[in-house]
Image (cartoon, rainbow, N blue to C red; front, side):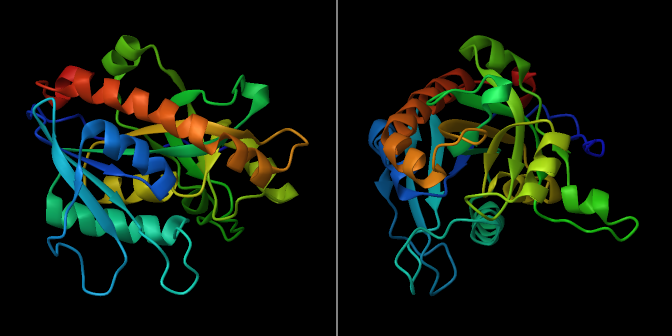
Length: 258
């Protein structure tokens, strides 16, 4: 069994004004950028030399920023994984000072938990599955379970599915990962979420996570092929869900989501 998740502190009674969306892939962000009519911000808010990209604008009275890791300067691909996501989230919180973070993006889903392609889940809890450490006292740290910011009214209004997100730095998984993912009671699996949750918890910023299913983890299909085949479909499903979430959040305080 996974160790008990650390709980978030009660939400402050603060009006939501600035929302930061952290997204790992350009292909995941593009439908939202277009739908929310955001524009790429050339203002230098990030450290010199990083490839990070920021899109900004207003939507439903909210100041909205989307940040992505951009493109890796050596390999030319999207810098996926926990390290780029952690750095981007930490710096974005420092410079943009959001009232709320929404981490949205694609994930693998577990058929055994009822997940299907293009389902969108609001994450109830995060944990890691590839930080194995048998030293006494470090096992729980390795799993790093965290409860998400509770938003039952948002879940009810949008009729969202919920589930636990498990995170690792590999697209595929090894048998040891499967054991821990089952112990985590995971419904969806990604490569960034638990790291973003760690940063948000560290800096005490409320966090909502919306994950859309591109591939089925517990199926014989090749993960990379399923992911590429369903990326566009799921990215647009995420876009529709995030737009509805922002509409619901507009004009509310953080405590109004509980």
